[in-house]
Amino acid sequence: MPVLAARAHDLDTESAFEVLARARVLEAQGRDIVHLEIGEPDFPTPAHVREAAHRALEAGETRYVQSAGLPALRQAIAEDIRRRRGVETRPERVVVTTGGKPVIFYTVLAVVGPGDEVLLPDPGFPTYASAVRFAGGVPVPVPLRPEAGFRLRPEDVADRITPRTRLLILNSPSNPTGAVMPEGDLRRVAALAAAHDLWVLSDEIYLRLAYGPPLGAAPSFYALPGMPERTVLLDGFSKTHAMTGWRLGYGVLPPALVEAFVRLVVNSVSCVPPFVQAAGLAALGGGQAHVEAMLAEFAARRQTLVAALGAIPGIACAAPDGAFYAWVDVRALGRGSAQLADGLLQKAGVAVLPGTCFGAEGEGYLRLSYAASRETLAEAVRRIGAAVAAGL
Ligand code: PLP
Image (cartoon, rainbow, N blue to C red; front, side, top):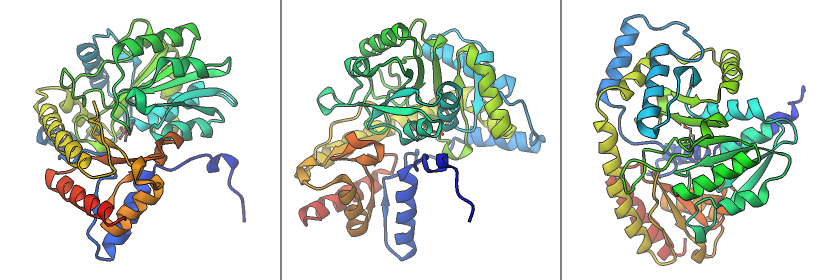
C-alpha cells in the first residue's frame, strides 16, 4: 500500500462540517435536529444577484477567464475598499478567489517557510493553524482572554514575537467569539507589525456584520496608515451577501505578493467562474438594502438569544459585537466542551460546536450560530434548557 506524504496529516478539518455530517446521520435515522453549527446566513442570495448570474450564463459567460479576476469586478472591489475603509487602492492589487478561505492558504504558502512562526488567535478559525502546519510553519496561539472580552490584546502579541515570527493573523470581528477589536488596540498591533517587519493577514470577512455603534461598521486594521504595504486583506461575499455556496472572495495585497497569488490561482483552480463573478459585481453595485435587512435581523436575534441563554442556570453569554455567533460560557456546568456538545446533539438534538474546535483556549465554551430563524433559535434554547435541567 503506498503511503501518504507527511503533510497530508498536518491538515486539520473544520469541525462544523464534521458535526453537520453527524447531525445528518441522526436525521437519516428520523431524528429532528436543530442546526446551530454551520456559520452561514440562512437568507437566500438576493434576487438581483441570482439574476445577474443567470444573465451571464445565458450570455455564454461559461469559459476560462483571467486568473486574477474579471477587470470589472477587481475595479468594483477596489472602489468598495475605498468607500468602506477609506483606503485608496488599485484594482491591480485585488485577486479574486474561490471564497475567502483560499486567501488564507495562498498567504501562508506565499510567505511562510519551514520553521517560520505565525501568530494566530486562540480561539480562532481552524484553517489558520491548519494552513500554517501544512506549509511547515509553526502556529503560535495568542490567547483571547475572557477578562478582555475575547479581544486580542496587543501585549499578548508583543510577548510572543520572536526573530522567527513571519506572519500575524488577525480576525476582527472574530469567529468564534464575535469580539471586535477597538481601533486603539488595532493601532498598537500595527505598530508592532511595523517595528518587527511582519506580514499580516487581516481576515475582515465579518467587518460589515458588526452591531456597533455604528451598526454595520467595525474598525478595519487594513485601513490603518502603512498597513496595506504589509497586509493581505481577506474579504468576500459569503457572509455579507449570503453567498456561501457561490465560492467568491478576494485578497487585496501588497504589490510584492500579487504575482505569487496569481500563480497560486493559476496552478490550483485557474480562475473563478465568470458567471459567479457577475453575481459578485451585482452584489457590490446598486443598493445594499439586502445587507442592511440581514444585519437588522441578526441584531434582533442576537438580543433575544443572549437573553434566553443567560436565563439558563449554569450558562453565561455576553452579547457579541460582531459576526453571527454566540460564544457561550458553559464552565459552570463542570463538563468538557466536547462532551457537552456531543450530549446536546445526541440527547437534545441540538447541533453546536465545542469551543475546542477553535483551539485549546476554547475549552469551557460552545459556539452557537444565530444565522438561523427565530423559531429555530427559540426551539434550540428550549431544548438546551431542558437538557441542562435534566443534567444532560
Ligand atoms: N474567515 C473566517 C473567520 C470565516 O469564519 C470564514 C467562513 O466561515 C472564512 C474566512 C471563509 O469564508 P468563505 O471561504 O466562505 O468566503
